[in-house]
View 1 (cartoon, rainbow, N blue to C red):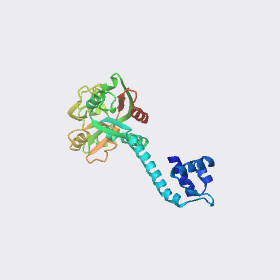
View 2: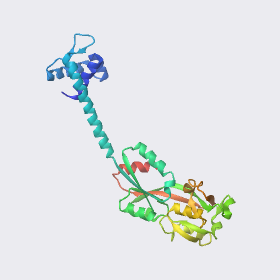
View 3: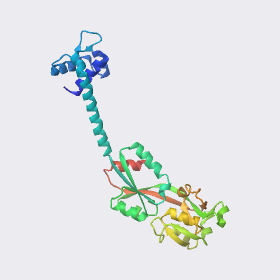
View 4: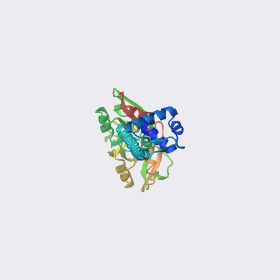
Length: 292
């Protein structure tokens, strides 16, 4: 007795016809007849009264029909369970991102990937650039989203691509003299107390600091951190102003006590890149990179 015999038996019983059962399973009527006869030989009973039209089950056939359906249901259930277990072990994607990038389109990327790969478990870690770089090198993360000036992109064995090119905004408090300006330049910030967004936790040697120097002055950095919410709180408290990528400020313009003004000029942008190890045999990572 096998699954095919049981399926053919149930179909004949339900349809009352060997011919219709054959059409349901895309086989010949002879094939159905032979399988049913083999099943009857195994059970040593007649399952159908073939003299009647439509064909109907015998008393023994009616009793066996209940068991046959139950057996098929359990078999299909077992197959489905194994498929779910197999798919649930599809793997994990370990992702790191720089503080503030949670305001970006990253969540949309993850959501799209998740829909196409529902059995991949995505873990996310938010930390500064230095921590992420070390985690990627140590193989604790599969891919990271960091600033384009991060030294990690020059490491051997790594690949990267730009995923975000954002304009910049100056974040000021509502009582600031600049509040009615439609735009600002880097030179306008010469005398301002600056709350510096430092992706790596430190602003010393930061590539964006060079933009102030290129404008002809050393910025008056009164505070630096990679914690965006703390900077926003301090701006609202009128402790200083800050410069942030548009992908952050477009989400916070309604925050009480602050105002955002575009910063214009040559190369006044912030780029975020995805960086990953150039390894083979990780189809989950390969699929995710294609989503970018």
